[in-house]
Length: 172
Image (cartoon, rainbow, N blue to C red; front, side):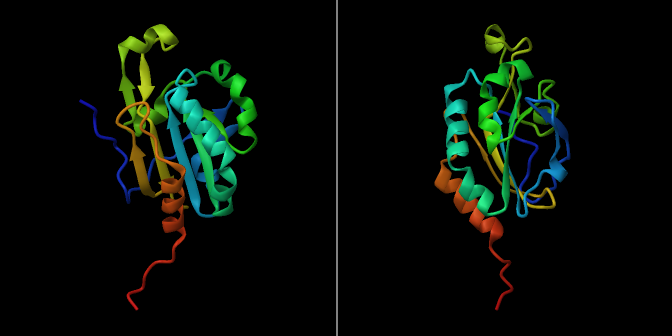
């Protein structure tokens, strides 16, 4: 059984500070774009679905950034495992959650002992999750994959960002 996420649409998510592969710290509340942030939690660079999603986000980061949303990728890896992918960071910060504090706090941790033999001493992974936050760190949309291949498509992400930027309806 997959546990439910602690992330609930409409609630403010906890703030955090993580470092990128170069050791540069990123605090969520200080890393939001003019409209918010798109958080993408990945299982690891050993996962072909994760790397495909990263390449898709990097290649299409311009329309996301143009709408004032800062994409941030959170990986439960150590910096040495991500250094190979540092080139992706020119438009897509890859942040390291090696102690899995953020994924645990957000209720996205998935313990699979069978993965311990591929570089995870504890076997702890993250459920593939993409979340959209507004400028007050309120969760506006979340897509939580039910398996490693289940990821939101770019048109779905862009649609949710457009909804984030839509003016509130005043009933008129």
